[in-house]
Image (cartoon, rainbow, N blue to C red; front, side, top):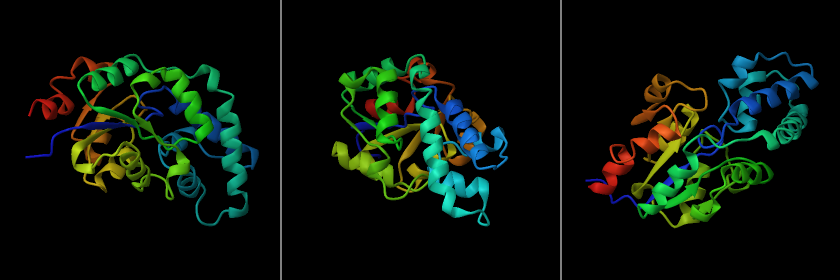
Length: 226
């Protein structure tokens, strides 16, 4: 029997807030600034990785690594111009509220920069039901390493055995699996349900709204009822 469910960790970018394609465009501009011609679809496939690993994956080992920080800083600067356009996905706020009303701790296990996290939380508008949150400053190594989830557990006083993780990217699933945490996938960030399932997600919903509507029959609801 699994341990009683006492909390849910939520990824934010692409899971609760519609930001994936803003990140894709911001990375494209950052690469072009330094004359790297990287296709947007290739960038999109890496969204959800930590920025350092995304750059490494897309530009390869033979690049001029001295530019890496400037590339990442450019991405951050361009992404910040999209802050006013960030929107929570339909049902995202209510999903967090439903989880909290069920007696669960609600944790935003985000690896966004602190400044970006502020904009994401403002778009989400659910701070009153959030028990803890993390940012990139809380992780030594970025996803798919599990550091940010370790930090999220610590911030909320939870154990891996008593939580589920809700995420939208294959990197989320891999990070959670490293800690033995089951992932409930949402296909709102551009990864398909099949990709999330193949990566190891235990179940997949199309969106936060679909997970909210199916809450009682989801793994979250079933673990609560067990």
